[in-house]
Length: 205
Image 1 (cartoon, rainbow, N blue to C red):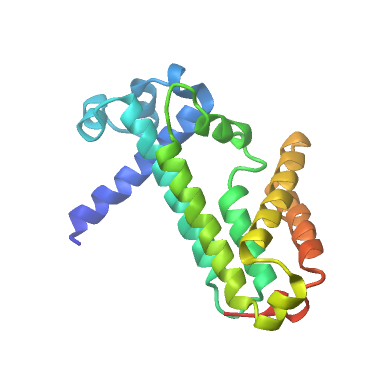
Image 2: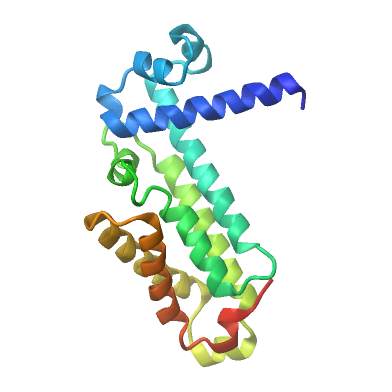
C-alpha cells in the first residue's frame, strides 16, 4: 500500500469517527453534512466526494465502529498468556463497554436503532461474528470432561455472558458510572459464571 493510500485510509477513518460523534450528538435527522465536514476539518465538497449523501455516511460510520469493536474484541480473545476469563472480560469490554461513561453512552445504542435506517444488514453480521468468536474461544478451552461436567455448550455460555454484561452495562449507564466501574461490575458477573468452571477459566491459548 502506498503512503498516499495509507494517508487516505487514515483520513477516512478519522472522518467516520468524527461523523459518528456528530450523529451521536444530534441524531441522524438533525446532524448536517456541514457540521460533520466542519468537525472533521474537511470541505463539504470533499465530504461528498467520498459519500453520496448523509445516509451513506451514517452507514459507513456505523460499519467502521462495528468493525473496529470486532477487531479489538477478537484480538483480546486471542491474546497469548491470559486465562480464558481475563480474555473474555477484555473482549466484552471492547465490544460493549466502548462508550460506557462517555457522553455517547446512550446515544450509540439509539443510533443502532434509528427508525429511518435499516441497519440489520450491518449490525446482525457483526453481532453473529462476535458471538461466534466468543463461543470459539470458550470451546477451545473446554475439554471433553468439561463438557460432560458442565452440561453446557459454548453457545449457551456465551448467551449467559451476554446477559450478565448487558445488565452491568445498563446499571453503569443508569448510575453514570465510569468505564472502569463498568469493567469491575462486569468482571464480577463473569467471575460468578465461571466460578464452577475450575481450571477451564484459567486456560490460556
